[in-house]
Image (cartoon, rainbow, N blue to C red; front, side):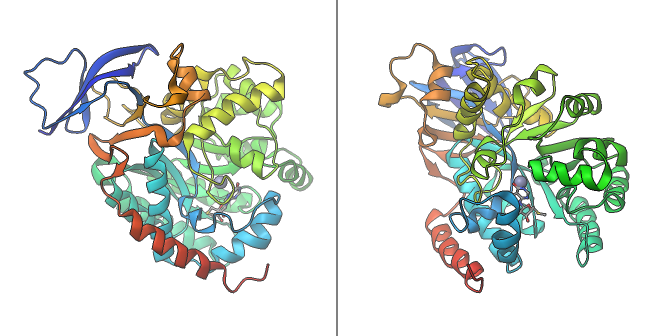
Length: 429
Ligand SMILES: CSC[C@H]1O[C@@H](n2cnc3c(O)ncnc32)[C@H](O)[C@@H]1O
Ligand SMILES: [Zn+2]
C-alpha cells in the first residue's frame, strides 16, 4: 500500500467548512481526515502549513487538443469561427497532433488545479493515451457529426473506443458518446446514437442551445427548441451532459429538470464568442446540476478553471444586478461537487474518507491571500491559477511544488509550436 500524508493544511471539508487537519491517503483513496498520528507511516509527507486544500477542479466541457488552435482565430461569433476558421484547420489534424495538443492541455489543467476533464474531440485513442500517460482523470467522447462522409464511421469508432477504454486506467477513464450538436446531427442520426448509448450503457455529451441563431434555426426547421427536440427524439433518456444551454426558456428548464439533464456552463467561451449568458441562477434554483467548463482553448483562451469559477461568480451578478446571483461558495461547488455529478462519477468531488484522492493544494503565501477574512472569498475573487502548488489524482502526485511529475513541458512547447503552425499553414485567412 502506498501511503501519503498532507500535514497541517486548511482543508475544505465535505460539510463546506474549512478546518486545519491532516489528510492521509492510502493508494488511490482518502483514508483519514483529522489528526493523523505517527502510526501512519507515510512514504511522503507534504507540509501543508499555509496551504488551502480542496477537491480537484472538474472541467466538465472542453476540446483539449484545441490548444493547437489557441490564438489562431479570435473575436468572431461561433458559426463564423467554426465554419470559416476552425473546421478547415481541423480537417488537417493528425492523431499525433491530437496527442500533443491534448498533452499540452493536460499540463495546463494540472498546473491550474484541474483533476478531471470531459473531452469531446477526434482521434480519441490518442486522447486516451495522453490521459493514461499523464495520470489525470477524464470522461472522453469521440465527437460525432451526423452527415456524410463520417457519420457511420464515427458510430463504429465510438463503439470501439467505448469497448477499449471505458473504465480503463484504474477507472480514471470513462467513455461517453459525443454527438456534436442538433445542427450537425439530424434526428435520424441522433436516434442511432441513442440506440448505441442504450446498448452500451453509455451516456451522451452534446452541445445544446449555445446561440440564439441555433435556437431560431431549430424552431424554423422542427417547430420546437433544441431542448424540446432532444426530448422528443429520446436523447435525454439514458443520461446526458449538455454543454452551454445559453438560450433556453422556462419550458426548456422544466424539461432539463424532468429528464435529469446535467449542464456544463462555460462562461468564458460564451462571453468570448458573444453567445450570451446562460440562465444559471434559474437552473440552480430548479435544482438542475450545473458544472463548469472552459470549452476549448481556441474559444476561451485558457484552461484555467479558477478563471471559470470567478467568471461564473461575476457574470451572473452583473447580468442580474444581484450580488447573490452566484455566490462564491456556489461557484466552488459547481467546479467540484456538481462537476462530478455532471459527469456522473462516483466517490469523487469531496475530501472525505473513502473518496478517491483527487486533491488540489493552493499555496497561500502570496500578497493576494492577505488578510484572511474568508478563504473561499480569497480563492474565488483573488487567487491565481499559479497559486496551485500540488495536485494529486487517484492518490498519485501529478504536480509537486509546481513541477509536473509525469509530463516533459519543454518537449510539449516545441511540439505545439511546430504542429500548431503547420495545421493552419495552408488556410487562407
Ligand atoms: C465533433 S468534435 C467537437 C467539435 O466541436 C467544435 N467546437 C469547439 N468549440 C465549440 C463550441 O463552442 N460550440 C460548438 N462546437 C464547438 C470543435 O471545433 C470540434 O469540431
Ligand atoms: Zn464545446
